[in-house]
Length: 217
Ligand SMILES: C[S@@+](CC[C@H](N)C(=O)[O-])C[C@H]1O[C@@H](n2cnc3c(N)ncnc32)[C@H](O)[C@@H]1O
Image 1 (tube, rainbow, N blue to C red):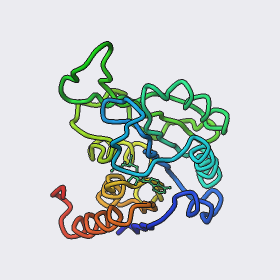
Image 2 (cartoon, rainbow, N blue to C red):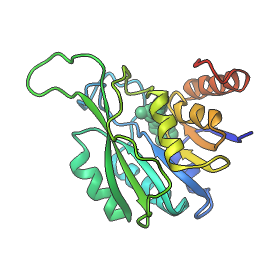
Image 3 (tube, protein in one colour):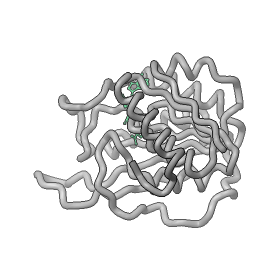
């Protein structure tokens, strides 16, 4: 059994209540104002977004609560990479890799198209990064949007960077993909969501998952 703790409210406020060095893995998919083509700002964005200073403060809290040598994944966009890698290094994370999820299907438009979503793979205090399997840093293409990320990708990240019984945090749970992956893979989970309706949907998604692990709901 794993403990799944979901809280409805502001991520940064909750992060500040977590004990130092108590978390084994952090996965962050922050509410950027970019759309599924990687372009931003997007006026039709489906959720409340956070500022760069808010994000930096949250990442400093993540650094504080992670156990030494733990891993951290930051979902970003190719338009943000230039500032996210230096930001993470400034906070003290060790940057290891960029993982790529290609978008399924051809994007229409002009110029170079945004055909992938990058995920930064980092660790606290230069992990030896030996506890994961050799796999490609290129995932297979998926259809997805800014809100719900592909469950197989989250399952891979959780499997690669934690073991059964570990505690994983995702401060911006959205549709709860990381929580579902943790439930299935028997990791404890802590996550936050500011939107009350979305939060309730995640609670339902997780409780259904308890009854039926095979079916994605
Ligand atoms: C990009 S989505 C996460 C998607 C998630 N990875 C998934 O697969 O469904 C970001 C989420 O953060 C939520 N959010 C925005 N501001 C927040 C805040 N201050 N505290 C907690 N959650 C917040 C948004 O409502 C949105 O659901």
